[in-house]
Image (cartoon, rainbow, N blue to C red; front, side, top):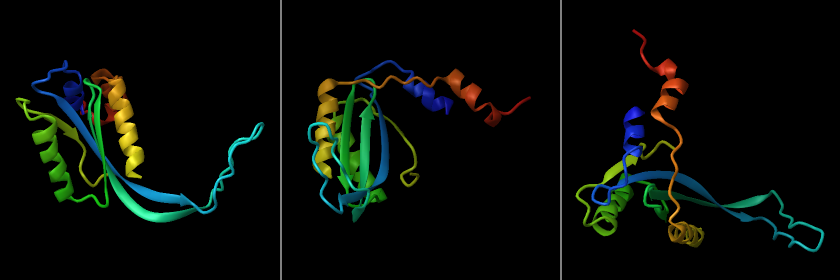
Length: 149
C-alpha cells in the first residue's frame, strides 16, 4: 500500500507518466416503462422496475496529475482485451514516454456514447485527481496489518 501511495506522491513528469487503470463489470439496463417527464411542480417519475440487456466491462485509464482519462466499454473483460488496451496506451497515448508507471489492481477483482461524453467532458476540464489518502493515513487506518516488534 505504501509503495502505491509513494507513486501517487511523485511530481508530474511527462517523460514518466503515472497512469492508473481500473475496470468493472456493468449491467446494461433499460426502463420497463417510459419515465413520466417532469412538469411544473412535479419531478420526473421513474418506475423502479427495469429490463436487463446483458453486461459489458468498463476500462478506465487515468493520469491523475495531468487530468487525462480514457474510458472504454467492451462486451467482455478478458486478459486479451486488457493486453490490447495496454498496447494502445503505450503506442498511441504515450508513444514518446521514456516509460509509463501503471498502477492497477488485478483484472478480475472487481451505453458507450454516455462513456465517450463523460471522457470528453472531464478531459476538456483537465480536472486533476487530488489524492488525499497519505502514507500516514495508511499507517493509522491499517495499523493492524503492520507487524509489531
